[in-house]
Length: 431
Image (cartoon, rainbow, N blue to C red; front, side, top):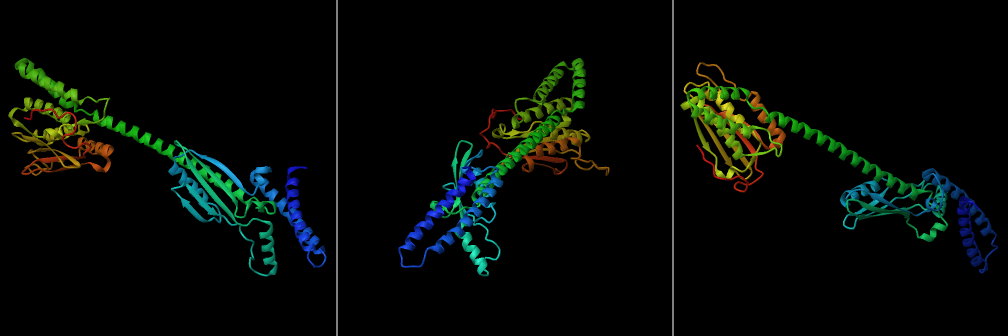
């Protein structure tokens, strides 16, 4: 006998045994003939055969095949979820909540369990006339109408295993008499599909985020490399030309200028081992630059440094301080008759580091009424762009008027290392 017919025959046999037991009890009582029981059995047999074939057709539509595992009223499935326990539990709970008509969802996160009920939709007209009430009674008699869902998650190393059980609320012996029309098979298939879909969506989102992050990182590195590589070419030409002249008339000063130029270039060339510099390194670079200019400008240029030793080891992006120093010379002191002074200051609070370059040059305006624009050139634009790429909104550059004249430019950075705890806090000479 083929499996579908054996499935229906077992249920007919169960109902037949039930009617025989009831008929024997009835026959022992002083009651009328048992012929009505035989008629009722024929009616029940017709229902059993009809609902049995309906159940088999629905199972075949859902699963594509009919066997002992797919036709069972009670379905159990183990689903591997390639996520950590917390993420896997969220996926599992969301998949169960998505079931149609699901109710009484109970989420037990501590024990990694989800419980729910999924009643079978009642036909229209429930509770109406006697035919509807009779249909509902027969439906409850021959079909399982209420189902429960129990899902348990077992965490692993980077993956989790979910055991999902979908079954009728009635006891197991009722399965001999009633069918669920594939309701529990449909529920467990829906849960499996929902978990697979959600895991796939997470994987696609992670891949898209990783791709976007990699692209943004490459773009950021390229921008930072381009901005870092900008060394003022005119300064190099002028310094070498000045050194060439000094070699004829004042060789010691020429030698001193070339020594400062070597120090400046050594600290200005891009490095491949790290992207960040330190306050001390940037200060030495700026000092080498200013010493070269002092040899060229003579007493027209004065330099004042006020940087505490415990700040020298703090990290900061390279070339930013140098850009502010170059702007102070180019736009503030060189155009001013008689020159002036450049101040380099550093202060730190609990969460911020402030580096200031100030001058007493011509400032934002000139005595003849013309205007000097400061902060709109490529140098300060590059500083702002590098701050944005490196720190986001946590850093800023401010350019304000100095008192009584000149300009003060301040870079404010978030502190990654408390003052006094960074490397490179060796003693340095200020002058």
